[in-house]
Image (tube, rainbow, N blue to C red; front, side):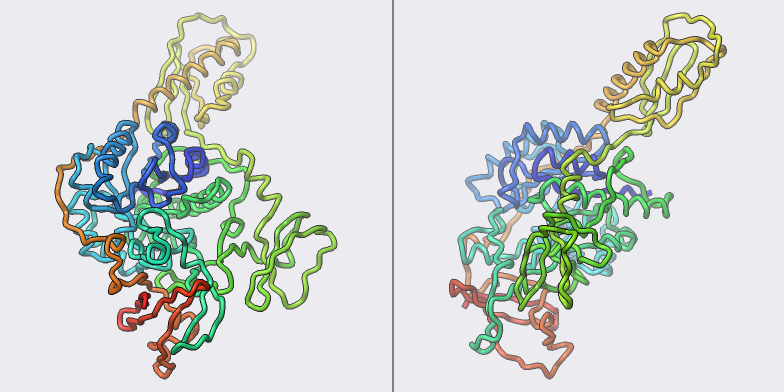
Length: 545
């Protein structure tokens, strides 16, 4: 049986805790430095708090150390990694292979998607270096994932299933560094891909101020079963800059979808963590920030009118509220407004409106919106009571008092009192009474036993967590000098599976008669990218002139 994890993002420790409450089997979070989202850093103390919470549910915490690291930073990073090891972080997500030359603690390593993990050969090489889990490139086909899994069956494959899509092959985007000295590979991406460009054909402007590199978002909630069938073991939600409402909703939606698949295949798959999630709302991915969703991650499309969230389409069945945010596209531009009076609002004919803010939804998600409980069975014997959880851990309390016989039947009261697990992490699935006689046991005594049992079992879970460790021997890996140190003009500033020609209906493979002008993109500040099309391999490359 394959253990499957739903991996959610955590901008902060508190958001990570909410992700676990809402169904994540693992979360990934940035530490004090060297994470690919510089604006999402966290102290070691906060990460430790998240680790302690996650491990109660057998959920894992991965920390990102997934930037390029300069030589003078190596010792600082080594010290950070040892601190993360000491607080029992489950794994590190890394980009720079030179980290392998350090004196690393025995902590598992995951290969970041920033390594551009697209081929069987690359994954085999990483597995040979000791990487336990590999984050695959977003643009891989199911057949490509299958080929990797067949060649590397013991390597856990992590696949992005939701969130923003980088237009460039991960780890190969130099645009932000080239234009602004802010390296995407150092966690400081300026999001050049979301900016407005003019499109030039043979030097003439043919489109103005369009977001020609701004991809729609990823949503594979309907393809999870296919991904599991081809070998994915970790389903990853993008979004380490997202707030708690986004993480709660999207995590809950994917957790429910994954549970439905496992229910269909109970002998093939199981969840990687413990507990059952009880939601106080019905999740809906359309309700959270999205730019619309691509039809195919292997051939992604863009929303060239706006890089902003469009939200959910407004239909005749949509119930609007005062203060809701609506938007629509008019003459190629996004127009947004607030609904002042929902009772009298009437859509204009011929306009497709989208709701990009639902105030009632936001209010609901700002409150506690889920509980996660670990199922337990309680057994009452003559001289002791036990509480056993779904992982087989048991706590016991001795019964040292003697009790009188009751005048009325006591079974219902014993079950009711012992089941009141309230604010603990447990919920009673069954209470079995093995008493030989119908004793009268005061409710206060039953409550005391219940508290002692739950405290003792929580302590057992703290000790039980199966922390995985992996020894490393220092090894030197030769890597190319990064673009950040060379600014080599022969190096593309972007390499992408996205194609502007295909976006505009001018694909040279699909329409060999289409005009073959030299295309270029020009920003408002005058910066220009020349476009080169490798149609045989279906890549588009951007160069500085």
